[in-house]
Length: 561
RNA sequence: GCGCCCGUGGCUCAACGGAUAGAGCAACAGACUACGGAUCUGUAGGUUGGGGGUUCGAAUCCCUCCGGGCGCACCA
Image 1 (cartoon, rainbow, N blue to C red):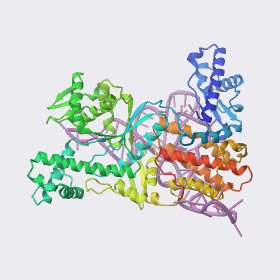
Image 2 (cartoon, rainbow, N blue to C red):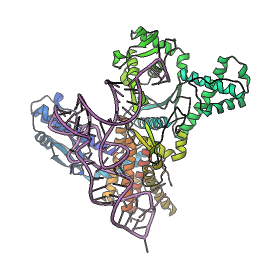
Image 3 (cartoon, helix red, strand yellow):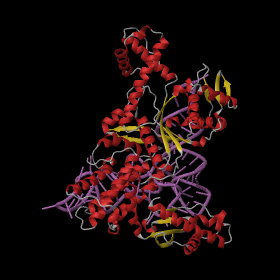
Image 4 (cartoon, rainbow, N blue to C red):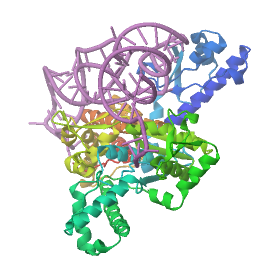
């Protein structure tokens, strides 16, 4: 537990004891009338270091004025060993706690001891959680929506892992269904065309140049023998080759983006193993399907969805939805007790129906959490960049990485909450200036590294925290920085609870700002006997926290820029 | 028409139902002959889209209206 968390827990239990005694004295049932209360950092510094709202919450059940309740509780508090030096009842009935600033002395040793693990907690208790994200169709390259999903999903996975969950990152490969058949027909046509046959492209085919190149590569590697093969066999071989190429390209892009998956799950295996058929049968056996106009429907409306959904088409072919239900059932059957999907907001209509199907199958639909992310708008030169799949012209992840680099891209995708539309300003992301928040954070880290380079050049090294006097760090800028460093474990917890990586990005920016202020106001090297050492420890710990934060959002912490 | 998300200073966005709504950018005025000026200090800028409600307390929850985005396929 972090220093701040320990202090808060100590205060909370003191408050609880005092409140129970007070409630009992008023003749109320303590077990029933003590509400959930918070002990948290107030926004205003004048309101102390921590504050509790318990008296406000107790006003109604106790039928007393909140300030009177607060005063009663405050008078009964036993705060020995909690660092509290002053308690005040304030405002409508908050109880504010002012801490002896000596508590700050505990923070840096805590950070130093934990190192790379500073900020880590065991919220998850080893619970198996799966995060499925990107899952782009293997029919093309990754676009901006996929990229945001990749950045978001990877960060969520990292944060959950850091907070004690056993995380599996998974990519669902949509290698079945109509679009894949279209892909097969398209590449077959390109293949035959390359060999001089008059082969027409399918109506809804993939007309991009990439398939022509794929066909050429296939011919170069495997020759023209398939022209004489049975069409089904020809398409099967060409499709396998094409899918592998596409997937390899996707993997390469993601790797360049710093995203790695543990599991690549193929949709086609669900069909091949009969899992899709079985799940349809089970839904039917449980009485949740009906036939209409030759198709088999799942009665999703029973489970709160706004409409029912087709499982098996009139043609007898199961839908993507049917496969998706089988896939999600498979996730739980593999032992995940918590499943998180990162989807584009354009799929929101799907959420209630998949959850409904899981409920229909007897699973806890609440164990599936869907993070919907709003769409990305690219801006360049102040104008939105048009993205169109129809014309095949859209900005790919590879192009983005080439334009702005991995760190800026990862930071930009993650710095806004998922449910906010993301305006991605290409010019800004590329700019190496104060307008760009990525460099602001990274610059702080590079400055820290620079201090230690100079220290090393003169033969010095950073002393352990235990050997310096932390009480020397009492300038306002120093206190503010230490105070914020102490917040990191809390910030990570909030980010984990809310599946909100943007909290980490904003936190890192905040820490960088406090560091820059400190750096400009005070010398580190040459600060004087004792003080230099203490500040070195502070700077070192700041570097640790920045690195840990940046690691959670997949952004590098450079030694030099 | 129905559903989901959003609406907060000029711009882009924060804010577990908490006290006086915060940052960054842009604007304006300034800064160390020393550790990296991709930095710092300060000033100005707001009836949180409008209205109603719940609450001791609402940017946050509910209703309604307005505006924007995205869905509403036997596509995925």
